[in-house]
Length: 290
Image (cartoon, rainbow, N blue to C red):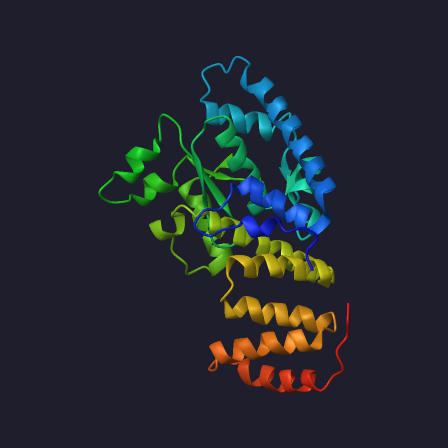
């Protein structure tokens, strides 16, 4: 189903960089020309940002300088109006439009921080991906060497909303958590732990797949599902979701096989009985070749 075999280089114990994987997704979905255009746009953006970074900073820290340029005159902004659009998930579209959603913009921001030797890390925060940026005042080593993680210290000043480029206060982070988990949710240090690269790319693929499903682009959603399974081959939930997509595309036998795998792995799941009936019904249908 994929247009390229780039995902074969995705070894979980030695993943490429986040930007490389984001461009791999573009190539897998739309081919090498789309990736090439994205790489050209990325090089242009890096050069433009370098010109701003070379200017007199008037005492600004490098991270402050980068954020001020990127979310100021360079025009990077979160897309409130079309939040669930596919354009906000795919890196080639983000680079050409300079718009996106938190997790896709975070991938770009993390790449640019690395490019300009600014230490940063992603935070897989509930409902809204965040980025922690380190500078001379908030050195990563000093944070990691602390005997006890101090919540106020974790949350204050260095955590960035990639959707707006703004630094978030402890209070604003709490509001984001309550928006995702309810008014009784309480912010703790575990919510602010650095995300592994695998978790970041899985989240990007999840939202991309969901966007394709939202717009009923099931073939492209299936491509995302295949990429997810390449990273989580034994995950029954991914196999179940792929089964639903196969069913939408009338690939009945493949859908049945995925449903049966899910049932075997999760026999006590509330959906298991429903999917058992579904799989039996699909087995009776004639195969459709694509």
